[in-house]
Image (tube, rainbow, N blue to C red; front, side, top):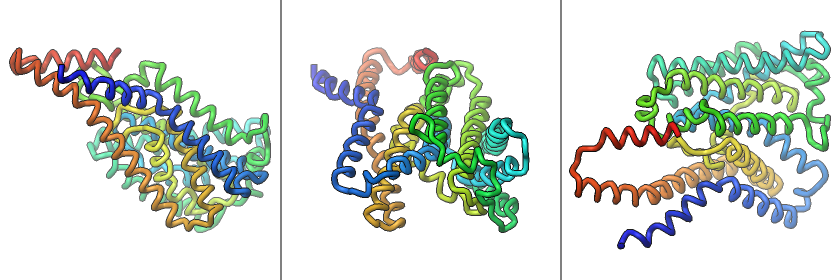
Length: 361
């Protein structure tokens, strides 16, 4: 009887976690309305489109980070992958004269380059058994060095790019630029794959309970390679779009992008503890973060203050999720403790088997 009062609170917290995207959308709408009323420059012609265009690249990289983070890993090399892809694929499509095949070649090349770079991360994590944060920090330095070597200290300018890429921001499809539609397409595809396929369920199983995932026979090594390759591929694709959006690409292209993408994913409800979050949440987190940065820029807040707020947002999001998770886990622990008192300590193996069955379901 003494346990029952905790259940309504637990139910509300679980409901809150299940509808994280709804809460994010509500916050986004609220901030948008307040900014539109208080800041004339915010609602000025062109600013909403600029926010969406800037958010698009963050969305694509954040969705890639979601795939890695949900398995309890992390990728710090996405910014360097983006920058290297921006220069190499931009230079490639700029040197080719293949007409309508140009976009296809550019997309395939950027995805392929990013996938190879991401796969290298997977090899370090899975084969060499390096912690992901150390492995990707190392490849961040390596890929950044390759970026300097590839550029030879020069820049790739907009007039060196084909028209379909150089004009990607100025074009409009149903009122939105191709950048925005690319971000929408990536989010939709990864959402379906992550939530509606056995492959996606395997990722959540790995993040929720790695031991149970292995007990079920999930090919965790292969999934690790795949998620890092997928994250790299999306960062590479974002690099191609980066070249079209900004035009000038040099050795510093993409610097700091990885922290923005990780912050967006975490703010969007993707747990750094693994096993929780959605691609849609990561996308909404990216949009929210980009809008806040735009507002701070309009208020003439320094870039250093923006970085401080970004770091604080990560800390608050992670701390808040940890507190909620601990609160949700408390009734389960009490229940297990009572069962052990009554029936004795053995039953660990059946419990693991039950947990594994739940993850597979």
